[in-house]
Image 1 (cartoon, rainbow, N blue to C red):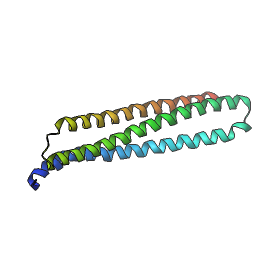
Image 2 (tube, rainbow, N blue to C red):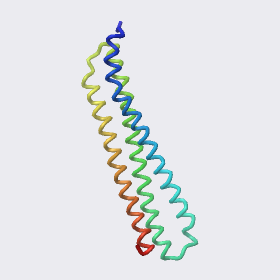
Image 3 (cartoon, rainbow, N blue to C red):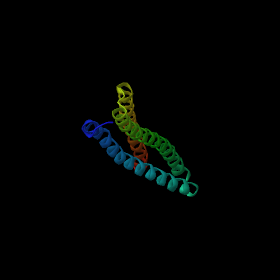
Image 4 (spheres, rainbow, N blue to C red):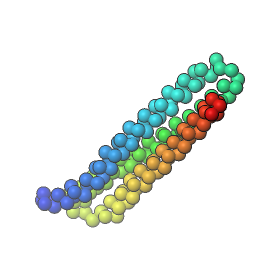
Amino acid sequence: MTSISEIIPVLQTAIGPAILISGTGLLLLTMTNRLGRAIDRARILANDLPSKPEAIRVKNQAQLRILWRRAKLIRLAITLAGGSALLAVALIVGLFLSALLRLDSAPVIGVLFILCVASLGGSLWVFIRDINQSLAALRLELDGAGL
């Protein structure tokens, strides 16, 4: 049987992944808000498209293409961030199981940690790409306004 004094170091080690889950949750909140805004903007542009003159329609179609790419990027970023949170949960469970069952699972724990951080890093990279895409859409609007 595992004593409480043997579990306390595991609890201390599990704090890092738990904090990662919390931070990833905030990142997911930001990403889902951006996805919602991109979808709302695309719906507005698509609904107004038939009533616009040809020049504006061409510009709006270009914006819609960018919004579609952005939505796909944000979806990928959300998937990677969610995967990172799930891997952090698996990491915490693995830490406790290895302590409770007295298993040497260092390689598994190490791989879970690397995958967790890599997934989070990938999510952030894709999120930055989305931000760049949103600036491309803004450039189209500003060009149309003569700025």
